[in-house]
Structure formats: C-alpha cells, structure tokens
Image (cartoon, rainbow, N blue to C red; front, side):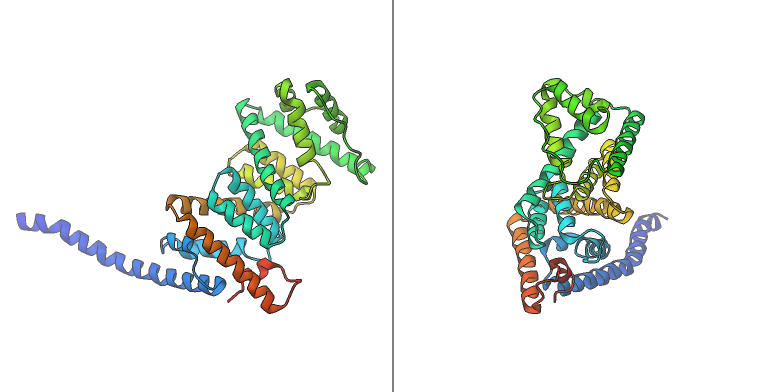
Length: 317
C-alpha cells in the first residue's frame, strides 16, 4: 500500500504529460504555420512575433494581419497608424510609438498629421483626467453631449457652418471663454464651467483650435476616432460617449468606430507583449526599419505609385 501511495503522484504526472503532448505538438505546428505566413508577408519574422507563445501566436497574427496591415479595412492605413500612434504615445510605449510613426510616414502621413495625432491623444487624456477627477454625473454629461450634437445638427442644417469659419476671437479669461462657448453651441457644458477659471481660457482655446478646427491637418471625423480609440483603453466612459457622438456627427460609420477601438486594443496588446518580454529596443527598431524598407522596395518593383503602401505590406513576399 505504501508503494502504491508513493507511485500514485508519478502515475498522475505521467498521464497528464501524455495528454498534454498532443496539445503541445498541435500548438507548435500551428505556431510554425503562423511564422511561415509572417515570413511570407514581411520576408522575415520580426523579433516581436517570436516573443509570443505558440499557443497564442496564430490568433494574435491573424488579428494583426486582418486589422493592422489589411488595406481593405474601413479606416485608411494612414489613419489606422495615426490612431495607433496616439494610443501608444499616452500609454506610453516607446516601441509602439516608433513603429506607428514609421508606418504612418510610410503611408503618407505628414509631420503636421503626426503632431496632431499625438496632441489629440494628450487632449483626450487631459479631459479624461478632469472629467473623472471631478466625479462628473454621467446622466447629466450624456444629456449635455446630446444637446451639443442636436444644436450642431441644427446649425449644419441651417447652413450656418457652410464655408470656411471666421477666425475665432482670442479669449483672455474664463468668463470670455464661457461666453464664446455659449455663442458657438448655445450653452456652456457643466464640465467647462467647473474647470478652474484661471486656466479655462487656455483649455478652451486648445480644444477649439485643435479638436474643433475644420482646417486642421487631420479631418474632424478622424480626430474624433483618435479620441475614441484613446479613451477606450484609458478607459474613460465620458470621452467614449462624447467622441463616439462627435465622430458619428462627422459621418463615421459603425465599422469605422469599431475599427478605431480594435486598433486601440491591438496596440495595447502588443505594447504589453514587447514591454513585458523586455524586447531589445535596438533590434525592434531594426525590424521596423526592415519592414518599411521591404514595403518601399516592393512598391518600387511593382511600379505602382498609386498603390497604397499598406496594401503591399500584406502581400509582399
């Protein structure tokens, strides 16, 4: 009996190991298939994909390939990378910042667009902090956002927002800022009234000139989608509510809204992987540069200047 008792744990471990062996083999086989597809797509297997266990790699790669490098998504490749950059900047993730900056430039992003994407990420973080910190009433906030959207729709229908808007007058203090907000939207939301009066003129001016400026490098719809992507992973329910409604007001579809949020989640996913595994930063940047160089070489050899860079990223050999 004593001998049987001593051998029982060993027998259990042996049975468990035998049962796990097929699963491990299957994971390795599927992992090999994923790496082969990554090799086919980029011409090599970037190091950050090697940091993912075989059990997770097939799904993680399919997701990355289907959203990030897919040229057929609702969001244009450049805008997806600007979303990724804004999210990465406020995590902050040095790896993802570098990757999405290089991918965005590869897809035609200008310095102005890159700067505005980062600024939108910062602005979203700022107002998320304030709205949550003052314990904003969600019901009242939703009501005020709905009223803002309703008022803006009325102005759009009346033609009041047609043509280039006049240059806004500078505001020098809190009361002046609230007066300008009321003139523009019909009322001043409670969260602006609660902002410290000493800083309100600057806070409103930044919001007006960046987020609400129709002459910015990034169109209004995409600025709101950037705000939504950033707020989704903070997470900030207030900013999610506002940026969803503002994006829809500017014509964003449900698919575009969903893709912006998905891009945000994918950036968070890979940021966790590369930081958690302490990826070598120099090697990571070298891999990103190699991907970009490969795409550019593929484009040149295809002699298709009108083709979108991201379209070749998903098909380059």
